[in-house]
Image 1 (spheres, rainbow, N blue to C red):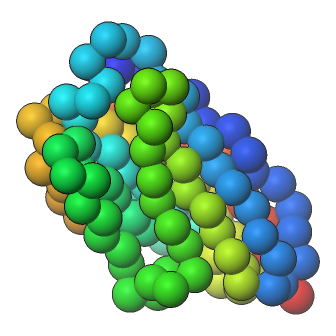
Image 2: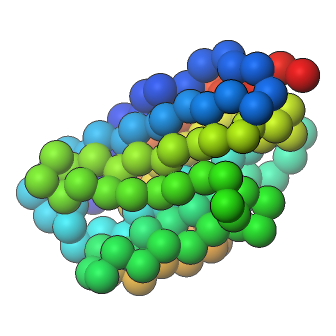
Length: 124
């Protein structure tokens, strides 16, 4: 398994932008599919975006499509989530996750490795 560390969260006004980063340990980062999930207080953890290991296919939740962009840099063992046009309903703890085998999934239970999370708060 890889170890994941997120950074880049913070407080931003509605309409603003943030870029989250997730640094992974281990030498086999490029064999993992990577995902971003979020969890607001009292809510289930929900899928945000994911990127495969191979041809870098990307997948998004409908709620963030067109506003968020996931990308990865295998040379730096890092995956990013660029978040634009943020809304108050985007406020949550954002988690990075890794799934061995390369194929993406929208289900949190399919990911074996998780970061500690980073708080994103969007004020209205």
